[in-house]
Image 1 (cartoon, rainbow, N blue to C red):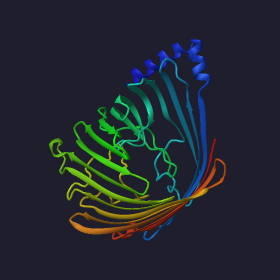
Image 2: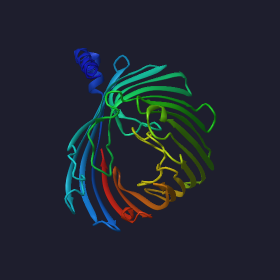
Image 3: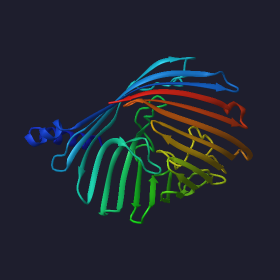
Image 4: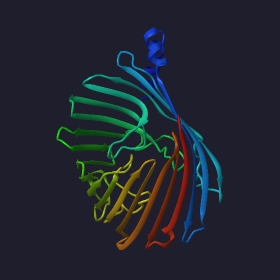
Amino acid sequence: MKRKLLLLTTISASLLSANTLEEALSSGSFEGEITAYTEYKDNKVDENSAFSMGYLNLMYQSGYFHGFNTTVGFRANSKLNEKHKGDYDGGESLPKALLHTANISYKHDLFDFTIGRGELDYEWATDFHEGAILRLKPLQELVLSVGHSRKVATVDEDEPMTNFERFNKKDGLWFFDLTYDGIEDSTINLYSYSVNNIASWYGGGFWYDNEFFGFTAKGAVSDEKKYGQEHDGHIYNLELRGKLDDFVLSGGYIATDKKGGVGSMEIAGESINPLDEGDKVYEADAKTYYIGAEYEYGDFSFETIYAHTKFKDEELKKKEKEFNFIAEYEIVKNLNIGALYAKIKSDEKDESYSKYSLNLRYNF
């Protein structure tokens, strides 16, 4: 893979000599973000923890030249302070700077292709990945994605970054994802993932949303025993939504396999867990009921959610409750302040805590 990436870089460099490509590069767009973030945890058993960090994120996307373009993204992180040593990075050696996006794409009316690093937004492939994706578009409403990822990194606004790391040794992950939105107000998604020698899984989802009502039904099943794992996994998620102007009320249910939980399905990312923490949602025999609300008024928005999870830990049935409140306000154009409060009450006392965070973000 590295040789292929270097080859594409060489090809791109040779094209730079063409005047038309030079125009495509000079007409590209830049955007950036400067954020200050602080977090405090009030732990019920362990000592309390706190840290603050700042980061700069820069993105560049070129114009197109004969269907080709390039995207580059970089983030620099800096620890500002921490209450105790290790509160910021957990004692691990984490990067201060990361090239999280670096790819070349080709776009056509019927397909597009991307190779390199970039952010993915699929059911079980999220965060930033290093790999390649082919998207076929035989119909305007139909997209078939075929992708391979060999490395994954985490780049979130509320925690330090992690380096790109291999998973599943050199084999990585293959996935097939089909999305169809040709039915009014609806989207259908079907997918299949394969992580050689670890697991394979398949599933899908259906979304319906109109002006006043919406619902989602999702499910996935993993096959892991044939690869030597002890249990298979599965997950199901149902959610109902009611809407009135800028107010949304929702409620849902998530259930996992009694013995295997979700198995290995979250190895490269996940998108079903609706909670800020949600540490037990994917555990074995986990049943999560949740209710939430969202509201926007002018430059102010808020979101709140309450969840009750019952799960199994070494044949013992336990429960965990979580409440989240998130608010954001646009102070002036491109300058936002956000706050989060999360309270976790668990039968495992050392995992009970309250979390407070505040961030100030400027986009340019």
